[in-house]
Length: 318
Image (cartoon, rainbow, N blue to C red):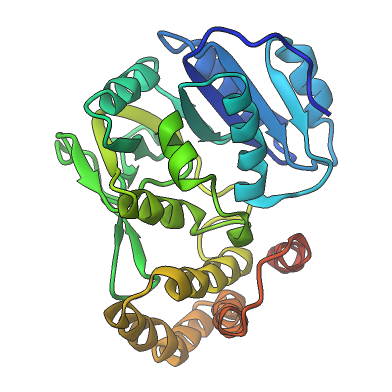
């Protein structure tokens, strides 16, 4: 179900994906309301929630357009519904937001300025931090980097205490999809997110496709957002996350992998599995390591991540 609204002024549209977490979604929307300038339109895509998410968003945010997918389409599929609607309504730029992200008051304005650096800047993202624990801010990601070693990608600055690093705008390999602003022309040229990934690695794939089309992925150092990371899929070293990431890492390599990238994957991810299994068992968490092993095998067999497979591993997490 999609709300019937007249198209507002052109500008930056925000797309927020919700799946059974209305409290987080409402906090995300409130942060967008505090933005200066605020986006002319916010589109919330409800990805088949089974709680009271839709009712609460409608009651608390009547200005928001709500799209109900009726099923869990995954991160990529759900966001694509919002992107399609934003493009239909004339958006010049679209910022994708996980509902567990809160942007700073000037974050969107700084990202817009970053896109305006040149027509070859296809996407921009901020420095993303963990929620404050009362001490110094810790970085979650300052863009992403492709690696020829374990997991094939790395979040730049992950876990570092913020102390002046990443203070300049710079090009990166890809931008994490938790908060990602893309110009309209880039979507029109390279297409939307690839929904065959379902969840994880679709942002890496998108960044690679942008680069192949001649666009830059740009970190805007002065823009900041806070991310309560991976709450929908359990986060961290869990079976659901490790399974999805393993399946989709193989899918990514099938499409974009060089011989060197495949070699690194075999050495660090495949041959390193026995050691990972032993270490995880000693820590009392063998399930995630076994899930990664099954994910690698499924990826090599061409099996895709599905809602049913995700649910199976989420039940295991619980």
